[in-house]
Length: 532
View 1 (cartoon, rainbow, N blue to C red):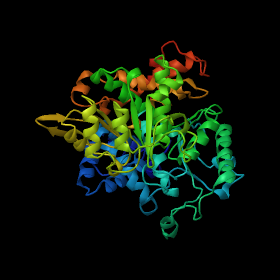
View 2: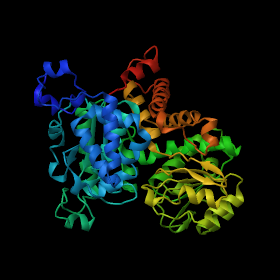
View 3: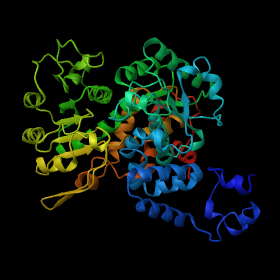
């Protein structure tokens, strides 16, 4: 049993001023703390008060990161009780700025860094991580951080933030979480020239040497942590698809940018049909952007449409893409492999022209380019649809295709709007709309909890479909009436539990689970959830 300063310096055990008189005597803390004893609620109020005194969100991010390192339980209790306020500070949009400034603001070492110099030693050096029973790993190579591009080792803020959400939103014990950055260099000249940059100061490893290093990492994880879920995060699109294709049937893994985003977006589309009255099988969906996020959504929507009775070819004809060169059509020589199934036999045309020709019910933006949903675009969608569905999913906020205010104002309040980053309420003609953020935090923590609970072998599309349907079913009529296509974030732990139960149940039904099926699955998963 730790005592004295050793106890106060252990982030997992430290309770600071919440230690009572008898505990202070027992653990030799008398004199090491001020006289006052505080309740957990008072400590949370103190944290929130001090956060609001800070001038910028990046300062609040730094303060919360410091709290996480000295008093883990208080950090997670604060996040859970104030999830609406804290989530944008520890993840999107603030995490984008935190990643840009990571080498300048880093205080305490967090996570595990692997560089090309570690080739041949990855399995051995993983033993340097103090915990052995790791269940969830989030890994990035920092090449495509949100909509900000190549941030190299600074991308570590993403795995750290994602795993904080696994704990806060789904009760995954922080002790079994491991954030990893494959620091294979950066092609960002400004970073390499920055004397404070902490990463591997070379141009990016590419080609066979890159994939060999990733493969060594995956094999090392499987050998050392055989029950771990591996989440790929913010990899460049070609690499993201190559890695997912290679490992999805060989390891318990998924790519959140491709599959997590897809499940959240599909859930929002499911919810929108309750307002528009147009069934899923009749929807026409247009994507602006043809990268990993947009194509991942389309792939899962294809699976959903096939489940509705359409053939794969029929399903794909409901989905169209526009990229920087215009409508994705057959005959274009610049398409990547993941775009080819969605290249239709149509004439080449621009974005607005394509809206007029195809007349989509749903418009989904995943471009990383702000302002691409112009007034002309929203008005065109509103002319075609009584209730146009507009998803501006790019992160952070500065990269959103349009704001909530623009979507409501330009559609005369008729748009059903969701975004990747949060937007506040907006009042139009006396009615206040409160759009819900289409945040991946709605699904990936619950999917992870379900996979860990049943010790799934893999995560096929059927499990992400199950997660999307479960999330959509939790959207109430009151949510829809106030303009929200997702349930309140305040209910995120309940939401994650429901998703975990549905994912685990489906895994058992499909024969993918390695753990023995409990009599009461919900009760068993709920009992696993970490409560600070």
